[in-house]
Amino acid sequence: MKKLLHEISRCTVCEKHLELGAKPVVTGTIESKVVIIGQAPGIVVHRTGTPWDDKSGENLRNWLGISNQVFYDSKKLALVPMGFCYPGKGKSGDLPPRKECAPLWHELLLEQMKSVTLTILIGKYAQDYYLRDTTRRTLTETVQNFKDYLPDFFVLPHPSPRNNIWQAKNKWFTKEVLPVLKKEINKLGLSQ
Image 1 (cartoon, rainbow, N blue to C red):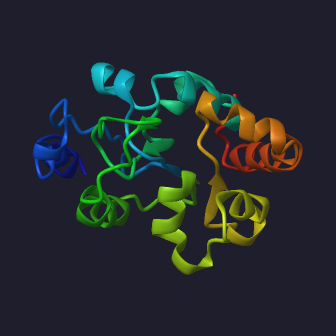
Image 2 (cartoon, rainbow, N blue to C red; image 1 turned 120 degrees about the vertical axis):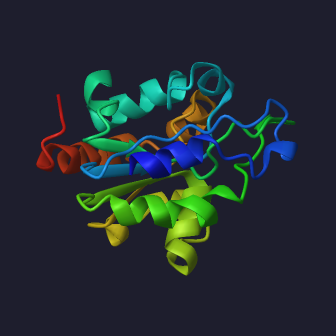
């Protein structure tokens, strides 16, 4: 696993498309119990090299009900984005994750993570890639039907502060989805 992570850290496959260059951000070990598959690092994460080291990560840790210490313990959680490098800025936020990373690296990573019992799919890119034709018409409908994907996958919207409006319109998410998410994390012995 260490060899593979080192190889990924040196990846430059899509560097010519990245305005700030390649700087892959991914963590995990063969002991990881949960894999969190998100979109791609943001600008803050690109600078620090620490996954989810921003307001989105803070929101995600609150949703999971876990501390920073648990979140960043790669024996407990693997943090694997769809695109490993910051994709750059778009008109209304960051660009989509590069499409090269997941087909190139995900299967190799997941093959080595033998202890994973739950994969959390954050956002439409991860859900479309892993759930393929079982996703619903919209991300909202997919998240509303989150129980259909358990016990293997737990589907979530992106925890970005940009999604606060979505959360305000979809109060059921906080009332119905997050308690089940925390219960799943508790079952794995990962809560604070």
